[in-house]
Length: 396
Ligand code: FDA
Image (tube, rainbow, N blue to C red; front, top):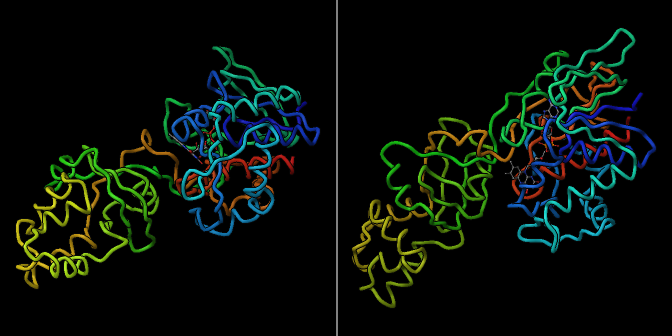
């Protein structure tokens, strides 16, 4: 009999298996894919942004913003860094605290886990898709899984659901964690794609499409939060880091606001330029601030052909409005196929914040993305996956 059966060889399940192994506990991981760590392998463009130096609970979305604090105090960013350093992977900060393996690739991160599992005698059964989990009269669980067409069962007093969220089905994503939670009577917080590009349709769609491939450093805001990073225009709307970040806070029907010049004031710039060269056109000034393509496109909204000296009060108001308060009403998002994470999931009220065990069902644990704890873009989601795997392992 194993100390636990872990469902899913992703970031959370692998960390849980290794940490349990350090404590002398035997676990088995059941994974439906042919290889472990599918999402780790493709993350960060194949380089895996595995944590963030500035990670705090404020970088996570949850109905209970305090829930993740306990896990993050048990397993810190420093713990992540030193864990990987121990196995030869040192971190390099790319931007905004985002840590990537220096000189290494995402596959090296996965190899740390597969090698440790082997050394510690933790089994990973690949091509093993868990179908059902039942609680038996004696309180233990019977887990039924399909391995290469054959149905098999395994029993354990403890089950760890580390089966991830809904994004990217072709990488193995399933709603299994949500189904198990529902089956055992646990509440689910509504799920939706997060860290996902936003689409624009209607009268402005052609304008956005015409700028496809261009990016601008922006402040993107709604009434809850704002992010300063690049946005990217695409054929169907908006992407880029600032858009992915705000998408996690966006709800259908709402508008977002783009400040296209967050570090400067356009009216002050015009005033200064007027003094030196009033004959300069607004288009020329905008071309100094943006790519020519974007400056040209702004002609749809602004009197770009006018000289700076001839801009009147109404023109200036319009310019300020469009440059600093550019409103966009996204039509929707690009869905789970293009999302980096799922928002929502197993209600944190159902789980102990110290151990991540279900309060209702003894021996049933949930970790990683299937829990209602969603990180920002930038290594935060892996930090949650590692921390939750660690916390569960300690409690097995
Ligand atoms: P994860 O999805 O990693 O693992 C779950 C596993 O369970 C999968 O292997 C799946 O096959 C398996 N499974 C599901 N159902 C099963 C069943 N019924 N039976 C058996 N196995 C089953 N985050 C970050 O911090 N930095 C980054 O750079 C990136 N980059 C990134 C890029 C892209 C394109 C995506 C889609 C996502 C990211 N992320 C990220 C997010 C990050 O990948 C994600 O938050 C973690 O992988 C979640 O870890 P989990 O272990 O919870 O699930």
